[in-house]
Image (tube, rainbow, N blue to C red):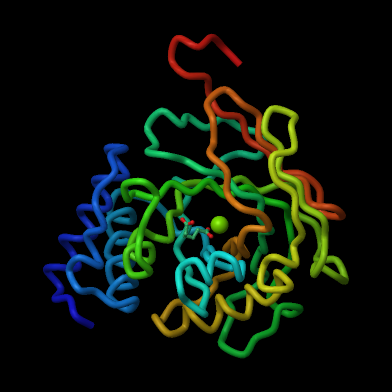
Length: 263
Ligand code: 0L1
Ligand code: MG
């Protein structure tokens, strides 16, 4: 760790204020000479600020789960972040993008934990349900550009998530077709294979990587396994759907821009 406690707290405050104010900041964490572990320390401090405001931890999310994103960042490991109830979007429900910086949306698969998960526990005995999901990401860094410590500190760009209907885990999840639709148009299509070859691998990675920082998945928590396609900019006044073959649909509706009529 390169950062002292007061530096960690100061960086968390800058990221938190950027998110609350909807204003981008420069890459402050790597500029301070931080490592990935420092990034996780800042992320934990950021979470502590949210909890102090009354938010509740609802789960974890995996990031950089596609080979393409890992190569782009020059890393060979996925990253993880935290979800809170303030990030929850009712399936089909409204999202106001006005206070966000440069939101993007990506189609995902979500898992629901059926028990507290210990290291070594497997997917079958831990995950009670699976659902299609949408993740809304919004980097707090200017131009959506960051180094690895920066993006880890920024809670892996987490901003919101919508979960479709839960169902019992099907026999196979490895290669389900996925579509991302905005305003009825297909804007991205792919496969759940883009999530670490099989989204179930994201569960194993979440258990392993979070344990390094003393974090365990808890009964009732959600795990967002990762994106099945590239993320796309999230416009105002649109209906967005993630359609996963065999799992169903998750959707959200962004409010129109002020003065842009009702939708
Ligand atoms: O959920 C994600 O895969 C995002 C991880 C952080 C990188 C990014 O913001 O694209
Ligand atoms: Mg994601």
